Length: 260
Ligand SMILES: [Zn+2]
Image (tube, rainbow, N blue to C red):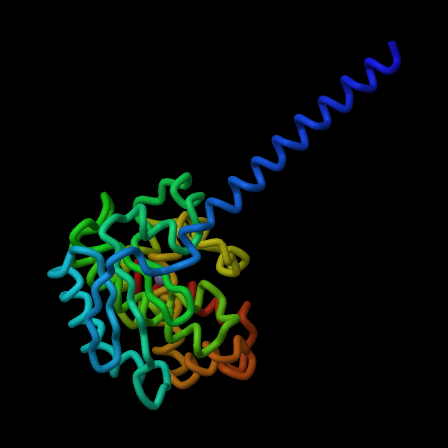
């Protein structure tokens, strides 16, 4: 019977091997959408600083284009650039198309209905304001283009900028809207949590509510130049003359005073 058992084992191994092979192929195929930011037949709007690529929703693309082009100088100035940078924006008619352009088809499994904009370096990716999804409205998505533009600039400023600072800057310079009673009504992220680089965890811990107030605290306490220094270097001691721990403690006090 021995040879038969051996043959059976070989067969089992072969089946497992094939299954793993299929899974690897499927995994690789799921990334096909990220290979090109453009989709077939995209149209172009070219401004002084911004180039917008869109599918069929022209009016919505136009609104994004006009706002982003008009805000380019302010954002460039705020982030210490001599002149606006060349930013390309890709606007997709469907939220699902947008979501696959950074993380591939697997992004759809997460069912992130709030996920409407992102960036890949100086390329901004956006779902069309005409189809904003369930969580946001038309205007919120138009505004999100400026938020994503800040991320695009941040990617030039510092490739290793922590998510907490990156989001804080984007919210503070564009569409952050923290509630007045934020401190008393919400769970406040701990220092360790503010170090996360996982966007889903960041969202779940209230990062999109709190990161704005962190940058606001730094700006009002130490001045904008110090905020920019931190953004470029990640160096708390040199930027503020104190440790990150002490800055965090100061921020909690700021929240108590201003968001209770
Ligand atoms: Zn953001």
